[in-house]
Image (cartoon, rainbow, N blue to C red; front, side, top):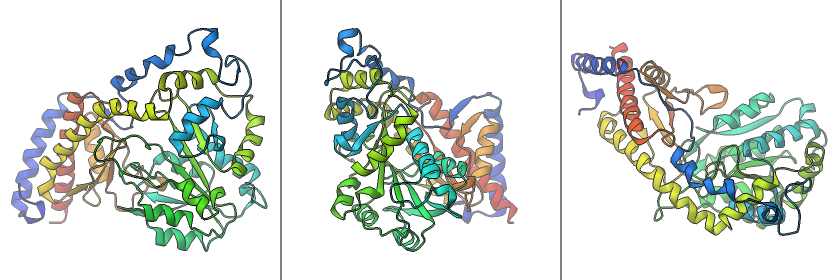
Length: 429
């Protein structure tokens, strides 16, 4: 294949006509395939079926401290669940609150508490501040951006590179602007780029000197043990350990869950933070709930035993996911590499592949896919307010569809990337 930039107008039109015929044949197949969200497949969910029977009678419903988990009580989680989630978050067990099933819910609550009551260092609630902002590494996680947009917080994009967010920009803004109250981070196998923050990036985060005393790093370590390859695992520096080294442990909230380990919406979610922050969180949470689902907490502990076993268990997930990622990547390589119209990064873990198409072509590519029966994450979703300034980023989620459907969907995606690029090139002629 020749790069499209080297083709004459006649060659471009011939190529477009050939692809259009192929596209129309696929449209006639009436496909209904979904690559829009990073949901585990049924095979992955089957791996954790034993969680459902791990608490099977009254005697198995007693926690290590003698509490009957069928009853009220224990605001911050049973001890063994806190220990399990401490391993996942990289903190001590007394620096953890196990709260419900959704880490997104914990993030929402953290922002909501700050809006209504402020944080320990705040002189007033965030909602009473005339102007507040969050930094948003891009491309990033759309649901993070939805939270800040919901509360009317202004979002400032910060570009990502192979080491993480542009720390020169982060430092210049955070250290000098007291209206910047937080930053969203997915530090390992980032959503969607698959980038893991470098050691230096983590250390620069820990050395921040925020102009706002109540600034927080929202460290959403959603894919901390979601490696695809045993011999190519990314290393992420422990943010809490580094923050403690610089006396900045109050500056970070760490979030994680078992949503892509056991069951989305029916697993465990937790927040890790300094003792001061944990006390602040629990004070508000004591009004919100009498306690979260301790039976689910105990069931997960019975099933996974401890964090080391949980990490070993994740190899089963990797065995299911790895062929899907490799199939998508090999298709992109075969169909797009030589054309000069797209780029991507091969991730070593996580749930997504970030595809950058020709500038101005992402929305059209997604539209073409939808018109042929393949649903993708909306173009622009990986940027604040849904606005990708170059209209080029598309998030691919390979996990949910069966391999045979994923193959068809990826081939169609590549076809649509090519068609959208040709339309744009021909419009310039």
